Image (spheres, rainbow, N blue to C red):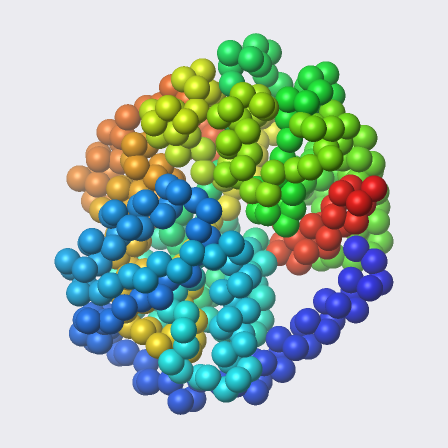
Length: 410
């Protein structure tokens, strides 16, 4: 981050505030009074669901589980719109709002979290308050900070939780016989085994969280990083971080001359034996990758002494959504115990549920408890031990830009 970043950030914020003031939703349909009205209005509608398209497990789950359930129970169809970056959906909604399109928007539902949610909230892009009508919200524990706050931004009724995520490093135990127990130990392992590790290039979200883990380790823990980004704090904390990552670069796969673009590309390198580690926000899906023969049976999950970063991802309904009621009904269905269970199955997508299991009926608690254990992935309780919070969303753009300038281009 430098003075130029401050200027760009200020201009962006001013543009968002202006957008929030000039294009309201006064011409939108009146808000539904209750969920029964939501269900009536939803019938026959099609939800344009914008979501990251690079996760095969997510795509399969939406197409094979959620879409049939939505047709059968809600009389709602899903048009899944795959995107390479959630910011594309946010920019689309923002552009429509700036054009005065207060209703009839082309985006009905977005899979989102972090800086993209924060950007949209600042601009008044999200339908806030109506999610309180959704019956399945009663299963969410809003007292948990990692649920009530999305990368430090209060949710405040503007999102519906969909999944919990716990970042994990995954390795091949047949090739790594003495796995490290800390992030600092992992960095030492990389130096001692040149060419056998890499990470996706930020701003890819998997590569970005690797950089944040390195920042936490370098700073002495997340508690040493202030909530607000200012030049002095940024310079003090990132100077040693960039030095470490620059020095690490020659020990990476292909000597750091190139980086995978995303988790899928990194998984392919791992599956082909070109690297010994991969990494993911969704370690529960590793089991199905092993069962399908994509990952070796010797795949295991690294447990770090200091824990790893965890967060929640959400569904947000734009304020100008053309099919608002169908989007709300679909979000409620996707939060239901049944679909949360289907999502958590190791032989399905394998994502941790956003619902609080203690709030479920005994039948559903028992079904979740009976999910098979995995040889590759420890339980969520083990994996989330010492879980570290995400940085506030304000930190992400300068860190990602700083990595590009100070590491990639050096």
